[in-house]
Image 1 (cartoon, rainbow over the protein chains, first blue to last red):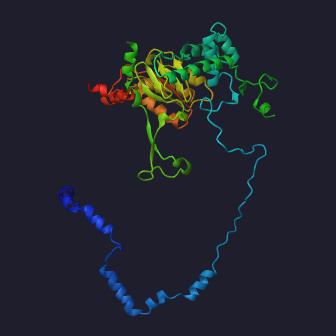
Image 2 (cartoon, chains in turn cyan, yellow):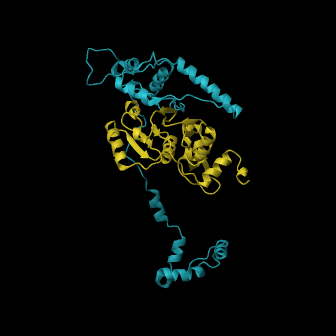
Length: 220
Length: 193
């Protein structure tokens, strides 16, 4: 029923709505909505009983004003203005944006044996591609402290891309790509192995064994 | 011949590009997302190089990245680096071929796995999740097309994220895609001849 009624009445409801709305908006002073009958009755009754109320409302009450002047808000809670700064862990003083990381994330300072960083992966995959005889899986496993089977898996499944620049095409783009190609190649050759320190496993570490620096050594 | 085929299959170029409505000044105020007519601007994520590597298009041969390079074959993609993934099909996706995520430090927040054009079966998902749970890495198994868009969004948010994608065997190309492709090559009019 509701749906059917609204279908019938809505065209009339919205007839000429735009101009009617503009008419209402364009009035300089909005028309006050009429009061309810009960409200008017109440107002009349109050005015009849207390006719002085209109005068009172317009005047300033000195008593109330004085009382308001005597009100103050105080707080007993003390705010410690000084921030406690731990000298061992000082807050950074330079708040400027440090720039993007090379690979999109921060390289770790410590590395668990058996794990590699992405940078190292790119490094040994590049080494393997350039000199597969020299950089065997065994050597890589020894160098990066990885399991031999893991290295073999990595060398099998992941490869570096070779960049191919098409002979035809946009000259500017081609030049840029060529530059990138030589730059990448030189970088690959220049890069020495990462200077990341290895952190021994907490369970396996012996107290006398000081082969790798530990977290506490690093702090000193 | 090959290049022609390649070109034709590169039609998806602009479909995977993501659009995000954002207000430039909003970056500093961080209050509103919409500020009335004429004050909002559309920012195409894939045009900003500072978002890292994003995937602009896919084809049967590989992927087009936002730095205009075309990647041939399956790939492992990180925020700013790409590796070739030496597998034949989605059948080769297993614990061994995803070992890079297990061995990497810092660990990736999430892997987006694009398995090509077939729907990933619940069995397959369960298998992947079971061994990824061991190394405590979240995986999202999707079709490659959806995986690319998911990767783009997550990467532009600045997350440490890994993607493993296989190019789809078949591509559903709509007329819209084809027109966009031709527009990109600036010979839309030749379509009408």
